[in-house]
Image (cartoon, rainbow, N blue to C red; front, side):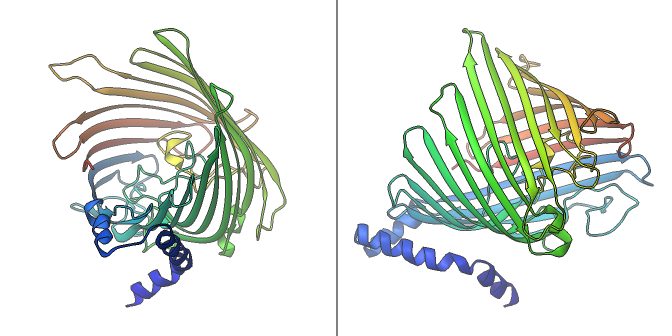
Length: 423
């Protein structure tokens, strides 16, 4: 009873827009009883499963972490009546065997952190109106939100419990080459789960984003994101960020393709943040692909002023600044990340083809390069096997961080087996 009341309270803002959407749908086309069958017959089940072994050896910890965890996600996406439908899915995360890791809830600091605590929770529950009004898409409820590269907003899909949002999104694509979006955020459901004090963040968040493709081969994406957190303990993350992302890809000839991704943003204090600051972010990553090879090199910088640093707490942070996750919180001295990446598909080995090889190297320092934080290298393999029900993917990845002046030496190994039901 208590859980149901909580869900109704947090998702209460769904009901007025839903009523309006249903009224609009009814006005556009008479709704017959048999149309309800479309919701089921035109729908599709959602199911994926993932097992992971994560081994962590961290200097200064009494024991190595060894986490065996399983994540099951199941739900259903309905068909559409006049463009209106919905979806839900739930997640179950459970460790297997002895819990030889700090899951951020058990407080067992003998072990390094593996942020995959046991949980059973509603992951998504949303309503969508797509094309009910021409060139417009509206989505409201608990949902997955990923902005572009996920540098500012993402779902942290690497972790077993993904990050989702109680949010409303309005997209409009009725102008040539231009897409626009408004995003409202009410609550963040983080990877730490319902039993963690850090598992939920309540806020008043507003985002504006546009994507323009009129200057080919450039795609230009300006954005603004204003986050004002309810809790005083989160006030330092209440910020306003204004930025621009640019992506381009140009085929040079039949063998070579050049590409570049970059971005710049300014971040100021906002809302209940007691500090007074303005900080900058930039990233430039050019690259080249040839056949099955893709190579890139880049620099990413998040400024710090000694007490405050440029932050992106809603991002898919595992994707940036090294996979050992040493920089989930930007140091107050800022962060400069010089890096290179490589990926390819290996030739057929012992009759098995399609094996992906990927690796990266990072050199970390403060934002002016005067203090060396450390370096990280990583290497991984992945292979997908097609089945009649959907792909099964096997991956193995290793990463090693060597500390100079920030954090401690740490190495991590992941073995992952996943399955996703084909629609």
